[in-house]
Length: 138
Image (tube, rainbow, N blue to C red; front, top):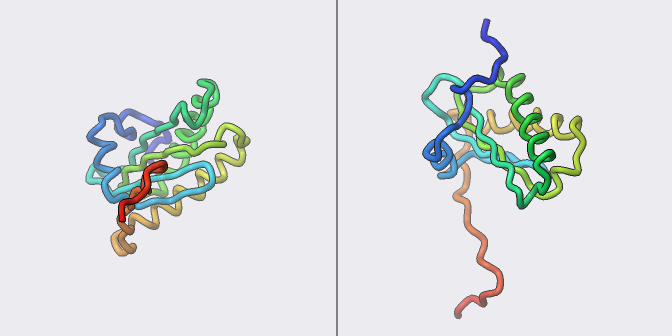
């Protein structure tokens, strides 16, 4: 039986691990989280966290969110295929209760796992929004 630890091999560690996922990922989102995922070849799921100071001002809140995300991943990783996941937060995440965040994360793990399966439809290419303040040339 596999353990429930969160060892080093279950984490995305280098910038190259992250950049690979940002290119045409499968996406899943809730009002406070966005998950990007891509299948991997390492034989187990891996998790990377990005909790921006812009979205969550206080360090204690950022740490709480990362702790909850790691714990949820640790308990649900046995249900996941071999995928790399990057979790990003949205504004307002620090106002949510621990129970609400855990509930949303549990739903997102299942959703992103389904979207990374071999027969799943490919994600549409993500178009960047036009920057504000500049008028489009005609």
